[in-house]
Image (cartoon, rainbow, N blue to C red; front, side):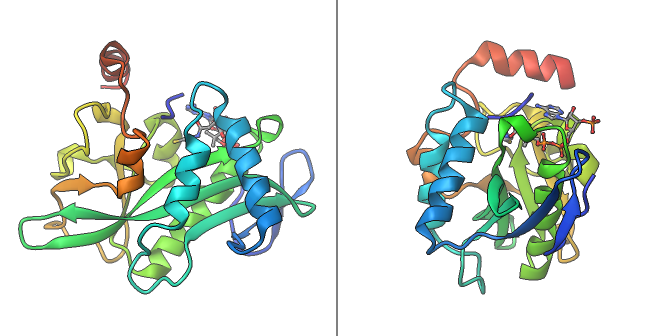
Length: 217
Ligand SMILES: CC(C)(COP(=O)(O)OP(=O)(O)OC[C@H]1O[C@@H](n2cnc3c(N)ncnc32)[C@H](O)[C@@H]1OP(=O)(O)O)[C@@H](O)C(=O)NCCC(=O)NCCS
């Protein structure tokens, strides 16, 4: 997947271009909004990653984080147009003591013409606040440390986590520890089924993984 200033609340802030951004829970029963999310995700990831919109659909209907009746799926809107989207999905950390429920943050998408204006940051901040409220101990992801480090994500392997796949570049495998985290909560991260069914974990290009590891390692 991805290598490559706004603090979110459930209200409006300004993009650097001056337009108000609101970040809020997706209305999962609103077909128009769901279609708009699919459009934004497809535009952000482009033809190189055609399965990501299907991943969003599949993740919406896979298992909920304990105590969360709705999917943890969030939209950024400018003047009621969807311009960004992020999703948190229920995963497990296979710790020695017990399976630990946690959340995986993916995918994150911002409409290409509005990238670089704080929309992605607002979505990540909003998602982390929601994860905290849900009581999750950790949010895990695969992505660029250059981007996610600013939100408190750190390399997960040095803390004892194991990558879901050998094809996930080590530096991209990151965790954001939340208030409920305890140091024993490490182990293999088990992603929910849609990531596997749609082959959305890591890269199939070994040379690319090695290149990323050399660059960021
Ligand atoms: C990655 C993405 C979500 C960021 O959203 P955004 O709204 O453009 O990001 P923000 O405006 O909040 O942040 C901009 C900062 O992120 C950095 N950034 C953006 N894309 C980056 C990338 N691929 N790698 C590293 N840093 C990146 C910018 O350089 C900028 O840094 P600065 O603040 O130091 O100038 C957006 O570019 C996107 O949708 N990309 C395509 C889909 C994708 O790759 N999603 C991530 C999946 S894990």
